[in-house]
Length: 239
Image 1: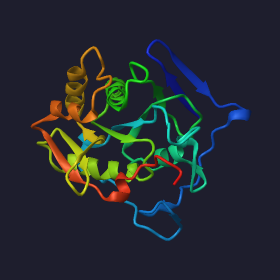
Image 2 (image 1 turned 60 degrees about the vertical axis):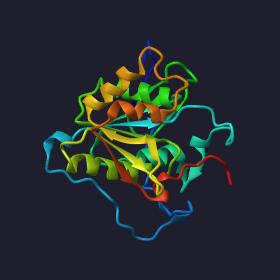
Image 3 (image 1 turned 180 degrees about the vertical axis):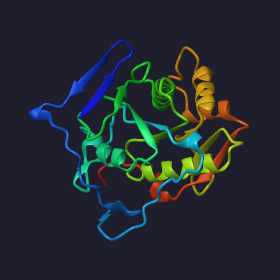
Image 4 (image 1 turned 180 degrees about the horizontal axis):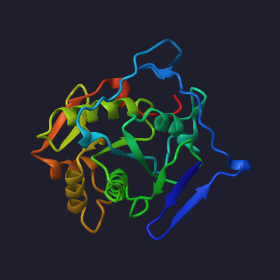
């Protein structure tokens, strides 16, 4: 198994050795809205495509930042027998051909490209911009961004991509909660729209800005998609 770690100046290709072998893991149990695992049979939402232009998707998984309320490393917390980040990676839609992880390099069960937010500590908006910038280097028909600390983020990504595919005239789809509040870290968009976001961020890379402000670069081609509370739920504390 091979995965890549990239930084702004270097790209490091890592190969698994006997002591750090990366083995495929069994599919994790599905989480309920309360976060409790269940092994009951479930219907898995998959994205089917009749349009060849949406067969190659790059996923941007936001896995950086300091977890001040959940130390030492919430992405390593066990969920259904595997780490939270591994759980999210395993749940990505089957159309995802490339995975960009914005965060520290770590061992994961599938090939990914690691990159870091610029500037370091710039916040969620900077992480999103860094991930989109790196994703634009790939040959993709669509890009989907999702948080690495939301157990059902992969399921939400499928829903957003399905909406993007079903309406060729739109440029991007953002998840919203029951009140209509936009969730800018759960976003599906076409490459041209991603480029608009990166260009709008400018030299600062959106450091210190609210990620919601970046959505203005996508209007009027941006539509919203209601997501269920379980699909939006992220893990911030141990409670």
